[in-house]
Image 1 (cartoon, rainbow, N blue to C red):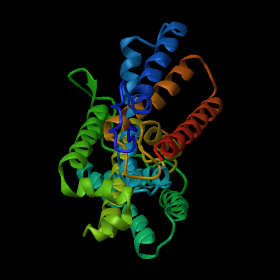
Image 2 (cartoon, one colour):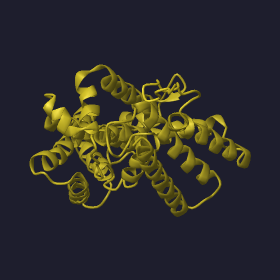
Image 3 (cartoon, helix red, strand yellow):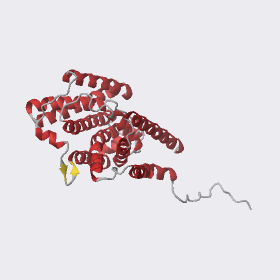
Image 4 (cartoon, helix red, strand yellow):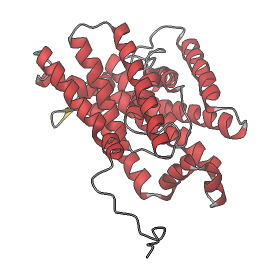
Length: 325
């Protein structure tokens, strides 16, 4: 008697998905291991003052990375965020020195929003590749910031605004709490609103999302606008810390934000990732830089380390995508 095995139900898979487990907890484990190494090599790393410095240093990167996450979830990329921070800082400081704190903040946020909308227009309406469009906007924003400031810092900010850069609320730095509130809002928006879920749909398959009735261009415009506003929030934090408007203030944030987003599990191919993961990516980049500073490693070597981490994260993302078929 022959047994037909073609209709035999497959055996249930036992154990756990190692790839999913690694993607979810691998970076957190690496972060803890790295922190343990820095704590063993430096007596300063775990002091209360340095931990507050870590939160303060993480705030502008977190603000930019949370906005960058929206763009990358769409399958796009924004390389202009660093220059956007510099331009928003100059606009904010110039208006603030002349008209006061709140008009200056409004002007800075408006500048960030306009830059985001300009990127969106180039990508969605002119059909320029996001890499090229935002690379061009990086140059435009940097040139505009240097022209507006004449290449020098904009000073004369109200004293109360400068105090915000180092203020504490319940023992925590106020800039960190602002960035955390931004991250919480982004996470809730992506998880519980229709436009937030549409961001994932567009990044996962734009053609299918369009057939399902999702306004793909509008979602991409929204994501770039949020990214521009997030860059303006980072400019607000950094401008308060240095008490002036600096045209070159956010130079390293473009690379660092992409590194934090990709390390945090957001796929460069779009449609997958979370704000919680991005927060872990921000922590990884911040702890890496802080620890290397405490060990007197040069800033040039730190750039090499962050670049290598970014390459490793992209390569891992590609391997996991191939493994999923």
